[in-house]
Image (cartoon, rainbow, N blue to C red; front, side, top):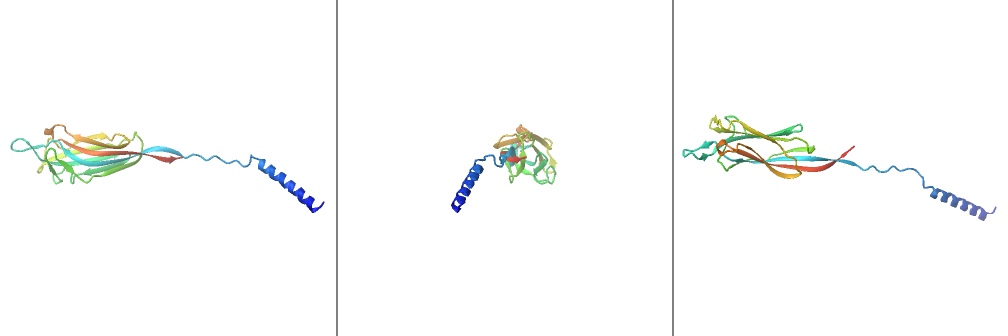
Length: 189
């Protein structure tokens, strides 16, 4: 066999082998890529804003409402967390009093309390207390009144308020706050 014949034969063999290898589509199996799985959770930020004075416990000599001396306490709790914001020395004779007349506001530095990875059924409770003092004597009509409500679930930023007393003669005060629920996805599995 001549060199040319040998080369032709080897080329034909290589062509057959290459064709056979390329036509074998079974090859190694490739696992499909698993799509990541996600769960929807919600984050909550509760931000206190101010306390509105609806009515005073005090009257002046003419019988009209005058400024009262208010103290307050706010507790936001649930899902293993509890956050407190209060006037200094709340509900004590030495506590800080905010002397405000009806229509006034107790302003304070807004505080934001946060929760992460909640569900719509998570229970976060806003509790609000108020006391009113006449000098060193606690006003019997206000005492240490309190009210509570569950922070309602609603995606987005919503204004809320919670009050104590609805009658101007009952030392009424109302806490205003924001509740901001944000939806996000987290990987699972």
